[in-house]
Image 1 (cartoon, rainbow, N blue to C red):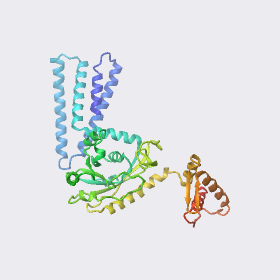
Image 2: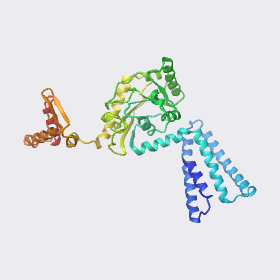
Image 3: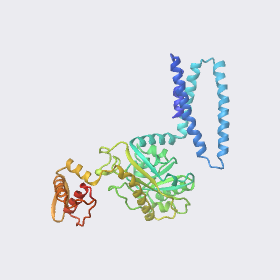
Image 4: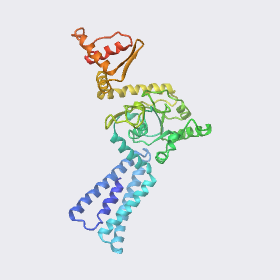
Length: 394
């Protein structure tokens, strides 16, 4: 993005009719784009190389920078003295040359731009809270084992870490025309239970080799997007991936995603109004587990992470009695509850009976901050429970 800014603002200085104030503004924007380009590059040169190679990388980068400065003065001399170009045409030429180099950089690193665009989209639609980021190893391979709540789970994980992640993706989704180009750029690993055994083993070996090469791989161990909002059993596929691989397993819990338009909440994907924008989501990374961990052990750890993440979600959740009143007012004739002794109760009738019970029990509960209810799981028990919550005695 910085190099594209350099190209645009440099070329804009070559346009005819630029005033002094306009040139000053363009030069300021050109300097801003230069900073937007060089600062991330300098940060990557500090972060990406290993400790043994970092000095060599920084020395080589500085050498190339000074060589570039030296060559730039020579190019300017050739364009101005031998080519006879005016400053306006020199700026235009440099802008076009920078644009060509930007396109070449995108060809070399298409995943960088794609990750940036996906990061912007995700951070716009979601307000992501990341816990346990320190549990992600800075270097070396690691397997993320995550729960699966929606179609955008992979994007939420990409927006939560600066490490490149290779996702194990269902082959039927991978082969879709509007997904496959992006999945190939992100180097996703397609897999399906419908594949032949040899192809299935090859996909698992690809994931294992990626871990051995120091990459991060993510698998949604449930094998499918949950349709009920709860954690499904974990499959044993990641055990085959981690066989003879000395890399940690990082349990990951996505919380708050259920209810967004990309989840199966209300029995459908996409075709529902978002509850809020940006939508609050928590991504909780757990402590590394050994590569020999069993599926039930990893699932238990993910459940614990979901409990921890729920502490952040409850602050903006609507209490039970308020949700009950809101639903009853919106759908008074819809079936609310039933048991073995009653044919059923609508929301409107249940709300009226709850208010009646709360008023009748007000004297009995006077002076008590909390009350205990010993009632069977029945319609009257649910009504008394809602009445106590509405009276702020739980």
